[in-house]
Image (cartoon, helix red, strand yellow):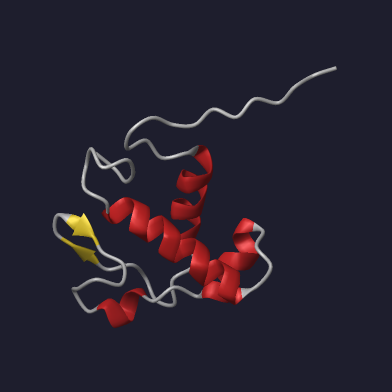
Length: 92
């Protein structure tokens, strides 16, 4: 009998699924992602209208049920990325 163990990342580490979702969102924007030196910005500034996510396409690409699930997934990931370093989530 095998048991499946889940490894929870420590600190600010992103999970493999987080990275998969992040990669997918860059491929599911309604227009090419705009680079605002030195950061790539989605839904924040630098003409955010050009960086809108196609939630239906994103949901399909990552195996979610519908656009609403895609939107919720992306916003949860964005929240995690926006957390300051050392606060239990996001990137360092």
